[in-house]
Length: 248
Image 1: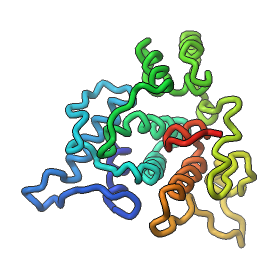
Image 2: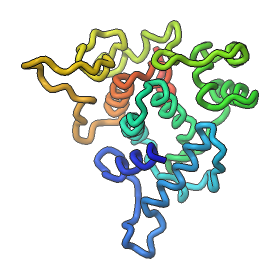
Image 3: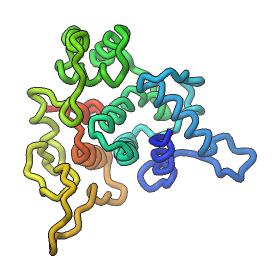
């Protein structure tokens, strides 16, 4: 609930993502912020493996109402809201889980569950494993549901920071505008390096993410979102799946 509350508050600022909503003092309104938070909380808790039941699915009127072209910026906001958890893998797993909920968050988007990734996830979840473990095991086993189930059956659990890493995934997204490289050297005092060391005297300020250019084209938005997600520890495979991009 705290995550959704933070996320919806960020969305309703309206500087990066724009959704239709009504003021609390408008008695005729149907899309008040508390209602949007309630519906999204149901969706996120259910999608993350909780017992909550989603009371309305498939209707644009019941969605948060993110525009499909603003999905990359929405993921940026989600990654920022998820910083309330100290463990990188928990943060990234939740943001990755939002990818499976896109059709229930964006208006004009309908659920597509025919991809190999979706089928593999269903197979693992049908065996009794939640979204968190299913996603981690599939990433570890390069998307092979049989290998993922074998891992989980042996009692495998993801490590905190590098559980989602997968051999062969490090050379991804390098074709993005700006040339983002997951192996590129990073400042030892930046958030991307995972350091909590205080800045030395005279070091320039370090910010969590690049400043957004006014009204950039969609491709630029995806590049900015990819870099922001990478700076928060998400793997290239996760970023490619969330943003609908080719990994290599």
